[in-house]
Length: 133
Image (cartoon, rainbow, N blue to C red; front, side, top):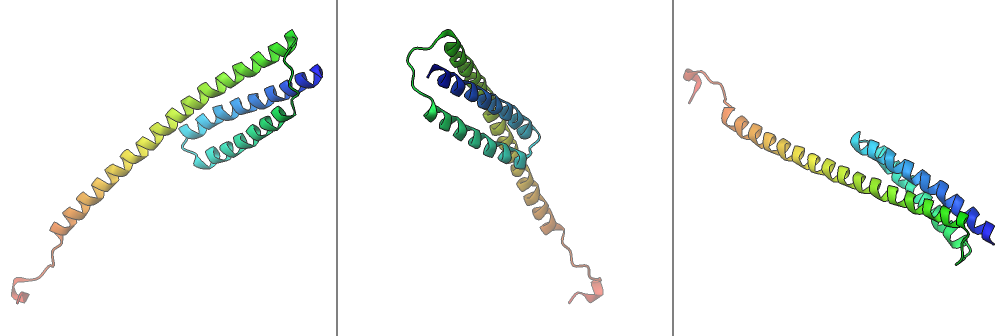
């Protein structure tokens, strides 16, 4: 029974490492403004989280762990902490990116309005003075 627990924990560790790698790749996608890549990574992340949930359901509940089992749990906790830190960083970068896009849209809208206003004042119908009547 204890080996089943350890096996489940080891499988979870591999998946949590994959989640951490994906979180790092998400940061790169955000920095590169590659929304397709970011979307793909988020999809992969959901799949891995589902696998972890499935493993947790299969993991036998065991209240007493030997030192090796306790060490595996500690490794899982450290990986989760690193993932949380990376995800918070990604969230902050994404919010900055969104704010930058809104700022750029605001500038474009102002420029568009200025150009339109200027264009209205400069439209002239050229006529010779003798043709005006």
